[in-house]
View 1: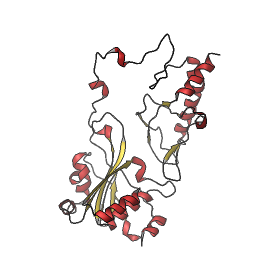
View 2 (view 1 turned 45 degrees about the vertical axis):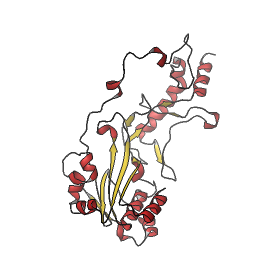
View 3 (view 1 turned 180 degrees about the vertical axis):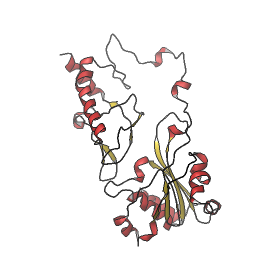
View 4 (view 1 turned 90 degrees about the horizontal axis):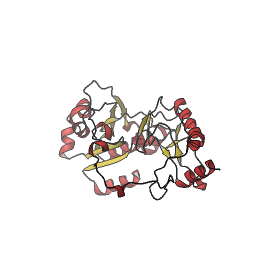
Length: 289
């Protein structure tokens, strides 16, 4: 998709660009770390933009959801914002005066800044073949030079669903069980028999947990997309999608006990049990035999 975005920028010469992507977008692909993000920065530099980026977890700034995303803001040479920001030092941009540091404050401490010169490569083909670097969660690019550092957010306590949930809700909004039978209509709330929980579910959970504890649970596919190595039922049989350890809800975020060896990630989202109803029904029926 980046090349289509670049074509738009070439045609329209927009003064500002705001982009959002998953947090791992600064790391891909697995075989040449950070190349894709570097290509994007090089293209923006060639088009006359300065760029700021920050990987932000919504939960750090008061939102009731652990959701990490990479946010990118670029401003074109000639704009008043460009003229204002490019007079600042790198530290000033990253810590106080940049677009993200103003809106999402960070802890005031000395930054360990790494640099990379995007212009040392002859063209994009040379860049694509040879560029390697490590982008941290905050960064700034100006005149083809990248400055990046790991920053720590000034955390704001979130307002959670429990703080705003409405009480005295009418009973017809609740899902109910009838005579102990489990309902699988539309949304599925279920309590599987102990035999099922202590059997196949527990076994799959333990297999997942072992992979996580060893740091061998994840990898990047050929497109740079993060994948897991957790056991799965046969998808063609419409079975279980995932069983993931340490979870209560699909939006939960789990800090890994050790960094994953292959991908280097230290946290993962959606750590939850995901069964579809066909699989659950089959397990329950099997347990009653």
